[in-house]
Amino acid sequence: MPRAERDSAFLNIPYDPAYEDHFLAYIAGVAAFGLDPRATLELTSGERRLDRIFNLIATCRYSFHDLSFVKLDRKQPPTPRFNMPFELGLVVGWQKAAPSGHDWFVFESSRHRLQKSLSDLNGTDPFIYGATVDGILIGICNALVRHGTQPTAKQMRKILDDLMEDAAPWILKRTGASSVFEARPFAELVVMARRSAEKWVPGLLRPKP
Amino acid sequence: MRTPVIVDTPYPTVWQTAKKMGVSRKRTLELIKMMDEFHARREQKAQRAATRKKRLKIA
Image 1 (cartoon, rainbow over the protein chains, first blue to last red):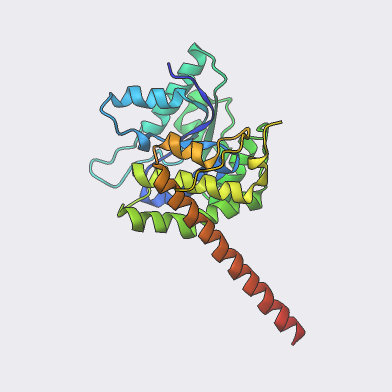
Image 2: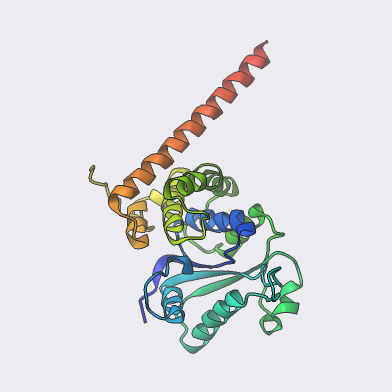
């Protein structure tokens, strides 16, 4: 089992073009807290995918699970994607079996959806973000309320603007990638988000006491 | 290539993040430079907007 990195956060979110801005909001929000966003997009080696996902989750201090996209798609046959609830289940099971100080947070776009889609989690309060990027930033702020550095909503929004308006289009153009949901654009977006966070959130560069 | 200055902070620096994400030092430097350029452009734009607003107020 790999050692958990104190400064990494696993993003369990849908890789769908309609969700691109939300994806950038999670990256910006997590980076604003001095955390490194991690996602299954990074997993490109030949090892069994499930093992790689589990190892990646186990290296993270936090995980964010957005279940708002668990719905039927338009492609035939219409099927919901279960990857996100499955990965959440992996985290919950792992936490129960071997408590490790890992904190997980569930995000949903609308109220009462979780009770209907995943009633086993009744009693867990999801962060309802109203399907907006600002809602995601506020949700991350609330989830990480005990974290050392507390960026303001304005600072988080500035990082997100940097990613949406400048970094993402530039990276896609430079790498020739068709979407940000690919390994290289994701890695480069994370680096640029962290640079932007160092600029807008001065507390992140405070030397160790 | 310029040697990065690593500050010992409670959080990973952008260089440590880049290493974790498998981004080369050369590419990291390029990404950092580009983000700094975006910031500079944005600040210039904000400054110009503020000056314009001030001028309009005076007029």
